[in-house]
Length: 263
Image (cartoon, rainbow, N blue to C red):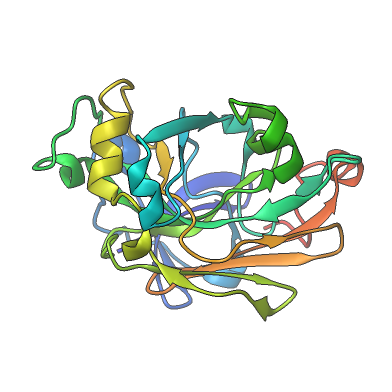
């Protein structure tokens, strides 16, 4: 089941997505599970897609891009929730920040409160998965040991286009494209640690709540983005998340930071 968070006629709702048709559903983070759809049906072009979740906590994984990182201990970092944006919203690149990269990642969306998960029950806490772009100011990453500034600017965590509840997180192919140029794809099977290991580690010290998001690491090639670019991340079996890139000053003037008409 695909679950989108949408704006329609000024109201935020959740909807099940099937092809180009959306059917309204209850909020899965208050009901505790994906729900059967209601009768109300909408066309995809009638609504505006938001980030599919409004998390309380966003966690990323450091040193989880390939088998060599298995030699390092697991390390997580926090991304500000204010950095979360949805499909079509603009990624603002700060002036003078140096190189900024797009990193395509599979993101885990929690469906229930999770603390001290084990290998046996970790996936039971997952509602589903979405596409993430872990935007990173690469030069700042070298000078900020916590990576807060490097990964925390407004707009540095695009998520979307929806949550997919039926996906194999151990074999998801992730690919970044910049202005239509596809970078080398790779599978989450190439990551140093899989989703279960990541959730066991993160919940050993941090309680995650329904709607919280854990980024799992970038298995494929990442690429530099600059104002004027269009960046997309595609995960096979899930969908494509696309965002325009602008100068941060322009993003701050843009109001809702979205290019195109609002639904």
